[in-house]
Image (cartoon, rainbow over all chains, first blue to last red; front, side, top):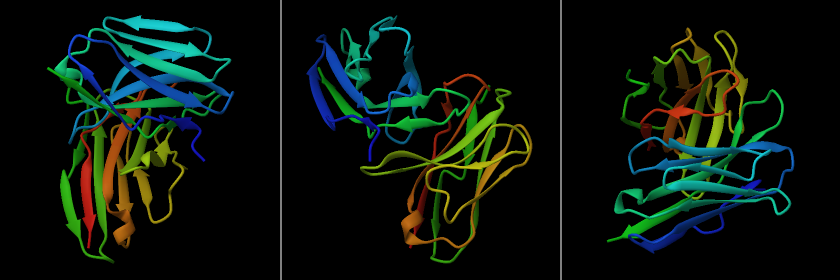
Length: 113
Length: 112
């Protein structure tokens, strides 16, 4: 059973507009969340993260929002650029000493010029 | 810094053959990980090593063995490859106490 769910396999957005990628989780023991970006034939690269004690974290064009009561997080990319076209993975970490991450299945974002 | 490097980039095996996937990192990270990525399955943890000399099973360890040779290197061995092990394998590393994992470019493995 998927504990981290990315319900949209794909998303298409016009260049310059906002991209919103969503992630839902089921385990209230997760205390840290990360977003990774992956281009074809490359490994995932870290994008942005958020601790469960915060509700927002911003880094340039990327903002992650966390709604703990809804067990939902979202990644906003503003403005979207063609180079943002990639697969985006959401990952979550259990609280405590276990450093293992639980991964979503990914959302493929296409930013059209 | 090369970051995380993996060899080979691509490999074709016949069922029953063995091979070792190599991974090395030059970031002085304590923790290292092996994942596999399959279509529709996301990233699944095979094994991880919290520090030199220790290894632990992840979600899908069956059919694999690992060796944490030293702080830099973490290898993944398939003793008798099966078609179900056709996948893309990623190695990653992280600092102890930090959640961010840094990934290598991956090894594409095809088992016929």
